[in-house]
Length: 263
Image (cartoon, rainbow, N blue to C red; front, side, top):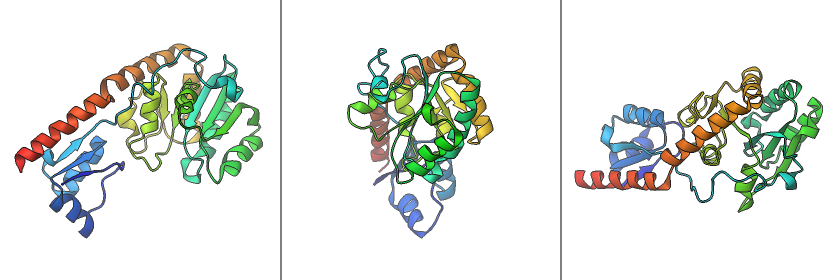
């Protein structure tokens, strides 16, 4: 019996969780070292029973693209603009108010920046469109809604920088790894597994999800093309080496062999 835990934290010990993890499961896959460590400690599991996997990304679907092989023209974004992008459902807990306030300050300091929001939500009008208008930045905020299928990788390729503040239902933050596989540096918060995925100052920047520190991080990266190139190249290298489907499959097979031998 093998379980996979996609959350960004280990569950609290209780009757049900103790039965699932400590008694029934021969092994557990997790996607963060902090989750692995907490699961071992909370449920008194042997180290060999909990295996951390790296999240995987298809390099065939997500990869750097030539200029023009994106959706900037469809979105009305000039080729020379510096695009800060986010992929997330537009919900209250995803801190869009923080992002928009930080972007207001960025737009005062760095010319030619656009914010591209890929996502939809029942509160999109209130949280994104109305707020951007009140802040006076509506002309620099692009809201095409949900973009899926073959258009999604091309929409992602519009980004020069990706922002990720609050993990959603996928605690493994797959959208961050997709951006990194496209060669895009990431500005992320210290929430969940994000500090494990994005190495601060190497392939992105880690910051607090408050307006001032987020503004400082975004201003730094939008105003420095050389920094964006360096972080983006490092992000791509990490994605190719650590987030490959083959590497994940080999780790899964190795764990199954060890657990079966132990039985």
